[in-house]
Image (cartoon, rainbow, N blue to C red; front, side, top):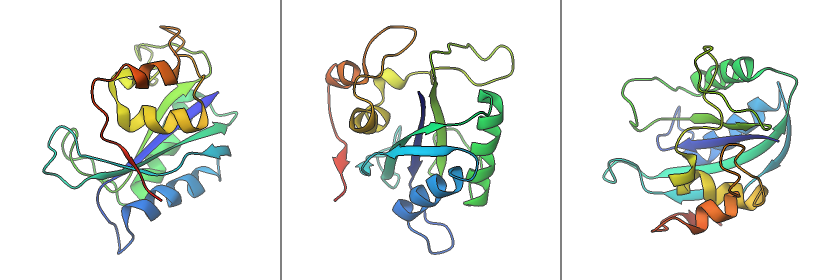
Length: 162
């Protein structure tokens, strides 16, 4: 199972965050089969909750691309939606993260992405959406399910957007 998380907190060319996330998944459909997309959620910005809130969603995809090639495609889609990498954790137009690629575990030492995505077990803005599309997905390193990781979080602030 290949899992992608998306988030946006800034508009681009008069396109709001929810539409940017949707556009990101539509663009992803040109290089992968998008099998399932979660509902959208609004979550506070992190680490600075004074920044604009994020719209988040997740997708389950299938692709023959390698993890590194998929990451390159994700970065290209982000750039096409106005993403400029200025500072870590800054507000952004579109963020596409490779959360998991099958059962692969990688520390990124080979130049590819870290898999599964680091710190996902502490991020409600990823886990809430994963629980909608793959609640029984198991972290290949810990064996914990998305559902159990979400349940273990001390606070919950994600709000489903209707």
